Image (cartoon, rainbow, N blue to C red):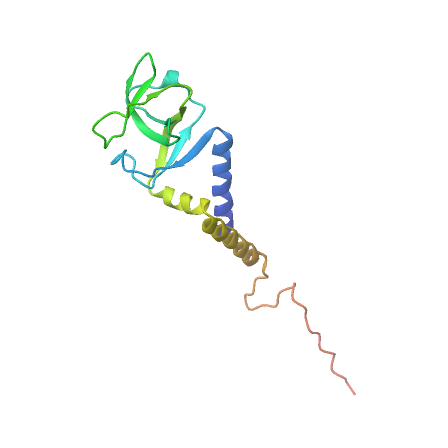
Length: 163
């Protein structure tokens, strides 16, 4: 029962963050090492605008090639934000503007992205559904602690005949 409660609490927390405007991204490269490790789950505040972003902040944006990138702001210019991965020697060469800006990266969970990526796959979804079904079945089964359970049919023996 505790495991079911923990799973439901985690799901409710993720849903709350999603409804509050946060999105989750899996870090797939080492361009932000050692600050953000490959396989981390990055939580991005999509409600934040460009106006509050400063040099040193980490932002999430789309590239013209359709990739989503999470990198640090190295300068704020009139045109927009210039970014660079912590492990890279040169800037990205892409100006982040309102049209390609997604949000500010606010929190990351190291290596949790591997689990999130698995959960998003077909095998992961099947595994999650199976685990939830097994947990529900386990919680719905009558508890056996050596005593007869009221949900189990009882065999009533006839009273002894006094004749």
